Structures are given as structure tokens and as C-alpha cells.
Amino acid sequence: FPVTITRQLHLAKDACVWAREFLDARTRVYQTLILRDPSLRKVLRAGRRLGKTFSMAIYLLHYSYTHKDGRCLVIAPMKSHVELIYQEIVRLASKNEVVLNSITRKVTSPQFMIQFSNGSTIRFFTSGMRSGGKSDVARGQEAHVIVLDEMDYMHADDLDALYAMYAIAKLMSVFDRK
Image 1 (cartoon, rainbow, N blue to C red):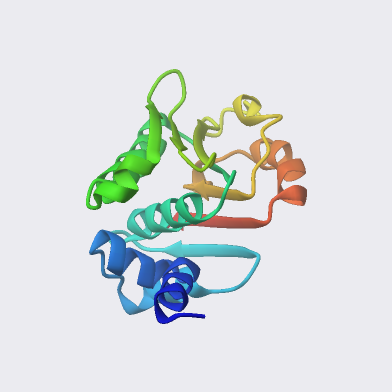
Image 2: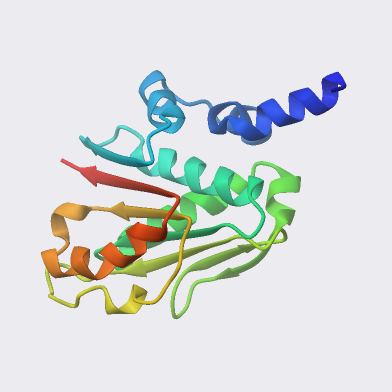
């Protein structure tokens, strides 16, 4: 392969290198370890102000930008949680004109959603806070990547409802705050 193609493949393969080159975003050592971990299912339980939302945003933006027709779901107990992740993705994307222009649609109501020119989408849903709502709003959705945020505030019924999605998801990450 010519050097430029090899470089582009390297950039596309590694979320941390991609974020640095495309978004001028530098990850901390522990964020790099999280983003590069090859495990199919990841669980992160970390304290406040460690950059979990930043890591999630890079993870989701990189996957959506580099995968044709990728489907990502973000599920959190409250609208304010998903809105924060949505805003961080948009903020990071705005750092590069090419990445920003790859976003063809941004929706904030009734549910947050970001759609890319390559057919990928990131959809944001709320599960409700220990409400027993059983994540009905996300039922029937298909995804390659599922991110659950703030699991401490989710009800066991929410997780049962999401279990069917886990079976077909290629990747799943759980980000939780202590």
C-alpha cells in the first residue's frame, strides 16, 4: 500500500489517533486504555470529572464516522444525561470541517439523533430513573454499539428490556459514575 493509504487505515483503526489527528483532541492515558480495549463488552465505573463523557463522545463519533451504516444507541436514565453526550459529540465534530460536514442531520426532539453521510446514526434514549418504565422507548431498536450511561439510576427492568439488543450488538459499553 502507498504510505498515504496506510496512514489513513491507521488513523481510521484507532479512535485515539483519529481523535488527535481529526479533532485535535488528546486523550489521557486511562482514556486511551479504555478506548483501545478490544473487549466486546466494556464496563467502566469511574469517579467524577475523569472524562467519561469525552471518552464516550470520541468512541461514538469515531465509530459512526468510520463505519458505513453503523448504528449506535446511547441510553441513560434522564434526558439531561443523553443531552450532555449529544452536545459533546457535536462540540468535538465542530473541531473539523470534514467531520462536521459528514453530519447530515441533527435532531433534538422528540429524541436526540445524529445522522452521518455514510448512513451511520447515533440515537439517544432515556430509560427513566428507577421508574420501571422498562426502557420501552428504546424497544425494537437495533444497534452495533450500545452505550449505557449512569446505570446506577436504571431499574433492573430496564436492563431486561435491553438484553435482547445486547445479543445482536457488535460492541457494547457501559459507562457509569461513582
